[in-house]
Length: 351
Image 1: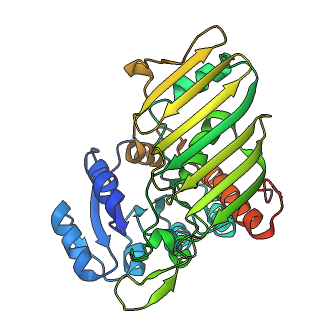
Image 2: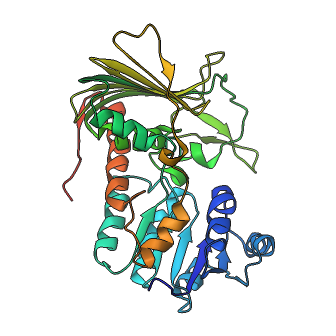
């Protein structure tokens, strides 16, 4: 199937789909984005006109059932990911699903089960992009024991903004649309797991600072179910202890987007804001920037990987549904721990 023509339909032409998925697919030889379905037919028409897409479907069911399509891209909010992924696979379509994978671990598990029932089809989750440029370098440093014994991990992403209680509720703050996903927690955890593996237990506190927000289009207040702030302590399978903080309400805090790895012989820091990697060893006075050769720098190639997997050229690596389930189980463990005040063990289930 390496030279075959692949016809793709898009469900949900959101920001990342417009910026990455549609242009990325259209740039690949033999791939045609032939149809789109959005939240309304009118918004679907606008997307079709923008990208020269021939067909606009009134419903996602019409798109999935179209026998002329080989694959679908799901660019909706998480509340539709399980429904569309399972329906697409059942209809014989390859599936590329936007992150976060699902609303919760149970939905992610159902998606994985559906994919395993269709082994001839490709199912892929859009990966966390934050560390792609440095993954191979950091993984190599860890294999070479640059840090020695890994002792502790710090992950922190805060905006430095004060709470804005009058700001309308967004889909990211609405549990009916986003599920248990909190801020950038899942994105950073997925990236961290590529380096050091997964957590084996989680203890978390969350805080809802703006528990009620204005509705986006109606004159009423609605519950903002997703926390504004979360602190996490986790024991990692590799033996390190992890501390993580994600917040949208720490006014005047230094804006931070970073991972620190502390070892017995060295320290490493990824500055996500500057997109730079720093490291030092025991005898160094300070961290120094690690210059990553272009040949070693990873890059966004999601659409290429998806099409290559369909054509049998390579297997999906970023991100498999198995890995997506692991980060959704971490996400759910954080929610369970915060609700119960107890430590939650991982994994939540065996697949």
